Image (cartoon, rainbow, N blue to C red; front, side, top):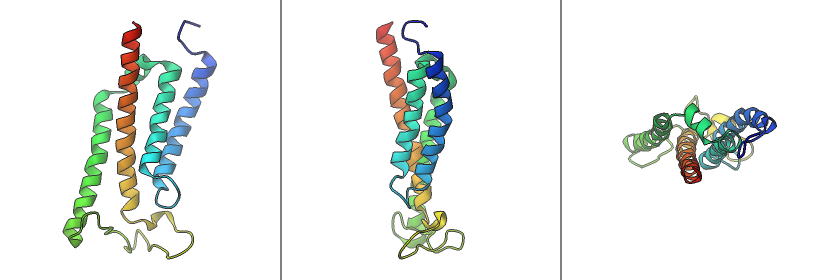
Length: 155
């Protein structure tokens, strides 16, 4: 094992845990309007999965596997989705962020009490996805920049 490099065991476990963490991130984002969690929390879990790869494989590996432009595009798409959904509310009911999908046939009705189906949030799941995309993109970028700066100082 080279100095500063993780063992094969750590790399294997990290490779196994990364997709599980990303799936859990998506779960937290999608269920944010029903359970504790949401876009920010799920996005933080997703960025933590990126941090796991940085720690296990090193920043050079993550830098090779990821593309700065794709991460930026991913984050930008999240912002665009949020703004578009917000502005649609203005055009449909003259109020910013109006939950215009609530009560529609495909999105169901919000129950007054008890459990609700996943499709009962109207625009909330869409906003959670947008926020999750922004947080995953933003925090991942910060982690990569910090890791690159540390690597540059070490060299």
